[in-house]
Image 1 (cartoon, rainbow, N blue to C red):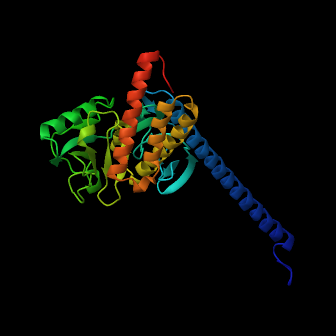
Image 2: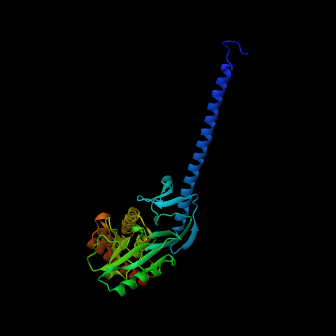
Image 3: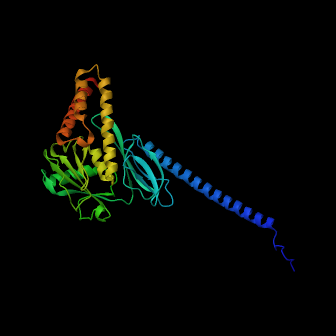
Length: 335
């Protein structure tokens, strides 16, 4: 039997047990934090790897390939409205990196297997390479608007087919066919409608039949520098110059992303025009053409009107004509 007033366990052993438990909890927390830190580092490395893959591919116009991106465990890739490459798991942002001047048009990427295509944006000089990135399971339907505008249905359908013929994602892009429910209404395919107009490039407003409408100036439909607007039913219209920007509208789901990339493209064009004005000081005719294009571009992107786009188009066509004459006369490029 124990004597009266004497504890069954000395206090020191109780103290040692408490301290031991605290140390155990500390090391468990440390191991957990190290695991999270390691995972955070892996996520950041993953973002950089994806960026390196895409930036590397962007230097090769005409390039088309199938890729397996280093995305694991249900991670999702998207491009934000401020042109950041972001990787998520569920709603948690795991990492993001600035894509800087790289123009990559893409929907949200939800699996590793993707298709990548690179095309040059010439206006008429080289301005940028555009990268188009989709997953193998994505489907796109290009179709004439129910209101064809100033083109007959057959003409408009022919234009769309020519546009589609250049896209290497043959199994992912369809022209016309049966009626689909658009993505924004719960459908499986993105529907892009096309409409031609002569001088009146207004969006038609709300529609339940498509995700995006591309309205273009009829007189420019056969030109590489076709212009018009991409219309989102509940957003401001986005101006475009060139077929490559139409492809960007087709393969980008997010309005903010497409608008950011379009604005970035126009800014790059402005900067290149300034550069070429300096480089063509010894050629008065060519320099004046660049100055005309600079004047046409001298407006905020969001404020570009139909007449502004026509001025830009006319200046680009003039440059293209002068370039053609100089190349044929001198046998070399002039810029």
